[in-house]
Image (cartoon, rainbow, N blue to C red; front, side, top):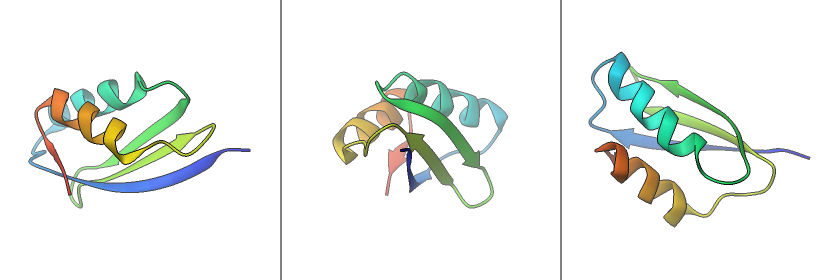
Length: 68
């Protein structure tokens, strides 16, 4: 059974930002899907099991943005 979690990311301003965040989060083991809503900064992550905040935060930071 999949788990869906919403996160808020700050600093994204364009499609390249969305692609970077999506790519980094997608590399986390167990992540099945990443959907980013640029205007709100909402990132919806679907995963096989809940993903720890620290892992998502590290991926977002690697992309150059901040997790709220």
